[in-house]
Length: 173
Image (cartoon, rainbow, N blue to C red; front, side):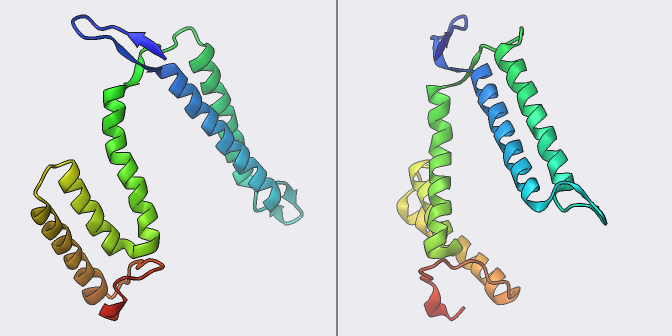
């Protein structure tokens, strides 16, 4: 954690940008290692009838590893490290207000399906972040999802994921 001060403002505290860039570079390196390992399993060598199925993914993984190592050393040990604060606590709070419900939405979709989870997500966002009335929020969420249900399930005949509990099974779709 570092402190940065801008003229006329209160000091900001948080993680420096070069630390975040180093973490992302390390993640790219790990992704490259996973691709390399997968390509070895598929066969990354040249065979008697041409390249193995892991031949090209092997080189993509190799490029990812080299890029991750290069970016990591440039950002962490380079002369021009960006020491500014990447995100302060207020900015992080705003990002988490959107990110955490989105993660919960993805988890809830697995159980109750896309339509019910989307209705809950839209209503929750309108009530908690938009400060709309609960009645207006719930009505909006239900109307939007009824329109999507009619569009996909009835008119286009494209069934969307209903979840393991399938709370809309009584509709017959």
